View (spheres, rainbow, N blue to C red):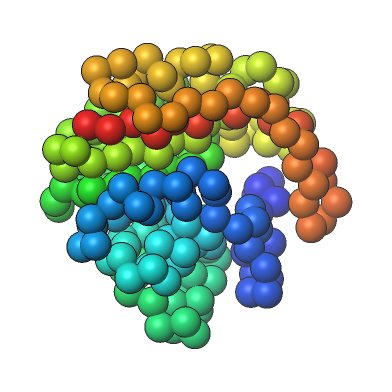
Length: 198
């Protein structure tokens, strides 16, 4: 069964996961004007489009063709500087370092045995003084029934912070929230967010 967002990505009038997150807005003053940014698992582009609208050069990929097509439409409509393509996180090969890497609400869909290697690669290809913004669902709430097949790598509370113990923690948040989607699905999630500086 396809996850609910696949169909919702076809709606070009609204972002499936809302507007850009507060921590993405707050990182902007800390970035240099020519910062290179990667939005890995970008969905329909709520962060990539926002950052590109501010003049940053953004690379963005997602495993969903529907999401990428929607972001391409937004790029053309708003004339944004975004390089967009379809890619699985497992298959992504870095070509250069980034000043900011965003992985928002993605890593819990990756098998536990692969997560450490992916995070190490994110860290390795972050420029010195650059940032990672990571948001992951944790086991403080049960996995919703409709996502049990997909959410194979839920994090333990505080686990993501340990991966960045050798970096400066700029921000760490842990909280729960209720989510209601366009199709009527309701979820309760527990979330950890971190901004870490290399």
